[in-house]
Length: 467
Image (tube, rainbow, N blue to C red; front, side, top):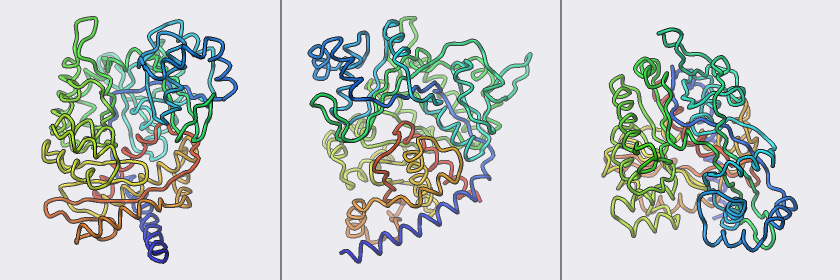
């Protein structure tokens, strides 16, 4: 077994090296990508045990601990804020609660931060695709104050503006306006982090969301009115940020008003043969989730993790399978993504979880596997550095160990599927790609890793299959 494991690790090492070279050589062939809809400012603070305990004791430890067991999922008091942070630490899970109180928003600002970064799925992907991969990238910004604009790196990153009646594409730093600062306060903690008697089982983060625009999937005028011209300028599009939609808003609008505009955009993209990927973040509202599943057939591709996949399978109607997906074993996950493809007809499903990635496609191509490997390297680089600044950072991730635990899954897949070779499984009318990922044991940051994975895999696969 040991010898077999070494051989398998050596094989994957070679596949990783080849995938990196293939992806890097192909990416310059991508002529343009559109990213919508959520961009904001990420304020990063690395939690300090003594500081956190002091602040909690000042407001009353008992009241804060009550929130851990009875979560509000919104923040209108300091008890809610710190109760949410402690719950996230206790469970080792990423959580995001909306900040309703202006007083708490002032407190968060005064508490300070260690780093400022561009945030939102669209914003994070823009700095990666435009700033690192140098792909011409058009990104939607609900608001563009100077604090946010300065967080965009140099490179072919563009936002639409009107000069007179003419639509122009300029770098965000050339389109600054005195607009609202949309801030997400992100509190990071490492595996083993302990506060009082609570210890984190794994690294993760708690997000206090003080952003009223992305919470409504606000689309600015230049983007709405110029969308047809934008669609003509790109080959690919990645859509995200719809997970926050609510059934009703106080002004009388509903989630349907937003989704009607999204569907109109998708119709335009499909008319110009733009391939589109939907990043399916967890959507709490069941009705909105049903509607999002309903528009999946308009997309080329969808990306999700086990929580998001289980939430979709539950809607489709197989609650037993949904529970098995959450338990993390590979075969129920394969059954679930096949079910999702059956139900929606979507041609590409990218599943990512801790330790391995899968991609189910209606077509056969080694580039599907290579794209997953390249995405794994990008994710490892992001975890190591906190922020990828150049392509060499991704090359450095080749030195990160490949996850040996995922090799057990690989062996199980080999026993189940006769047509299995180098991570590719021929399923007659479909192909399943499986890759063990690179694991960074002590990541500097976890924010944006999922966005890095999905965008890198989608973009690099298209580039390699195009070249």
